Length: 88
Image (cartoon, rainbow, N blue to C red; front, side, top):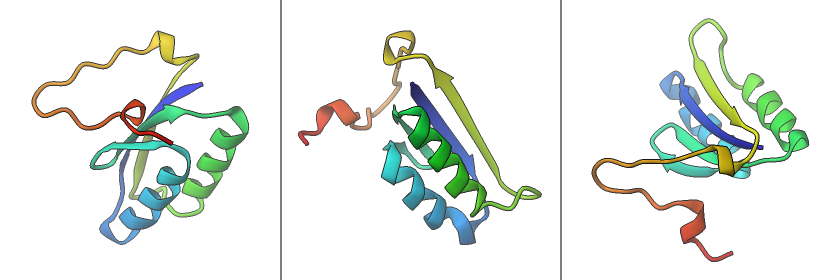
């Protein structure tokens, strides 16, 4: 599946959430990640984030798509690099 993850967390947890997201997804902008992920990786990602955030203060929004073919991206202004721009 292809996901877009956006978070708004307290300053003291930003680095931890960012580090977890970076393990599974591509960093697009401040607090925004995207990428292809397996169902197992998705479960791990959510579990790790749930272990960091404070439900009463923090917010994480995940948009799920069946595949990248159901997803279209349009940028205004300076375009951030996509995961497709990197050679692995």
